[in-house]
Image (cartoon, rainbow, N blue to C red; front, top):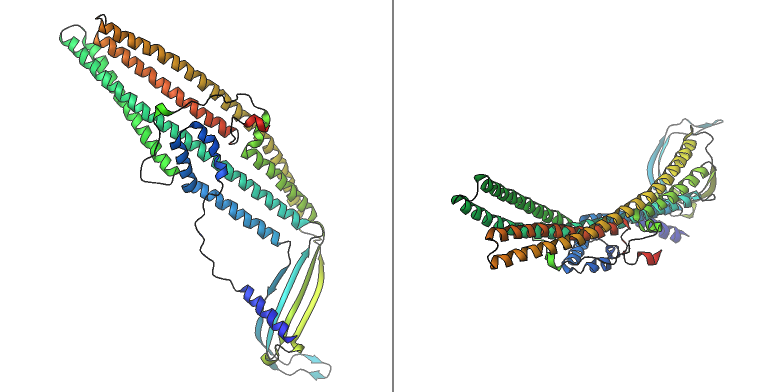
Length: 458
């Protein structure tokens, strides 16, 4: 029996000594499936998909989102621990010095001093008769589900915003290219008009007008340059990199997304993270309400101690020093100042608030989806119209060059026609990029689901 006590005590002491924690590797994003790479591959842009993979590897927001999930997984384990017995060791060593103040009849206890060695193993366990602790654990699990959906929302938001910036960067590159060509054309126009002015074929106002237009084009070039540099710096933050350039494809290689369905069921909102978060939040608060109701019921705690209690160290492990006690402790609050009633009412109010947020999430999802569809349709139609206008302007430019070849049009006529063509070309570039970005907005509104397959899952 003595050996059993010694082994048990040494085991408990060993468990209570904290081990040195191992250094863990830095947390990485851990849900590549949330990137939905099969969708992004439909843009047929290797540079875009490669950059998105770098985003997955390096972005700090994605790493923090993964850490928040890990944190809440531990919170679930902590709450689940309340459903299990608690076993602990709290030893005491003290010297008791008593004066002769105790007396039993004619017998008086003289003054004394002695050591006391007390090594109990204590067990406490709340019998979860009403399931209160189980409800609290289920509530924390729903909170974990909310955090998981928040992580998914972070993926959808970051990838969508990065892809939109990527296409805006391609647009800025193409705008700079067109603007430089416009400036060269306008410089030639200024030279031609100046020659006309020098020989008296035009007024000074015509020359000044063309010169002012050149300055406006130079200012616009500076704005495009600023836009490009700002986008590059922003995307470097996404990629957690302060050096190097952002690899991107030329504008001419981009392809417009076609054949995306333009009619969806309202059930599409069920794919959205905010909808799933509100759904989980209703369940969470529902568990909290049930747990708050059961706090009014009595609690039953089983407790016990086993260990050693001796006044001399050499008798600590003798059988006479062994002690054991056990019992059950029922308890109920007869008066708590209205705290439990207030808590129950608070949770009920929170439940009503969660229901309202749930309904709002549905309406918000439908609104954003309809807005995304409207923007996508408009962008596609505008792109088609700008293509037609560009083709017409290109014909005008070609006719001007043909007329120049036969001597019925001047160099200025050709330069003006070219300048008009370049202006329309900018509209075509802008509308094409807007068409691509509108598909990203639609993807985001749909909860990060492949738009080509969305109706298959409804």
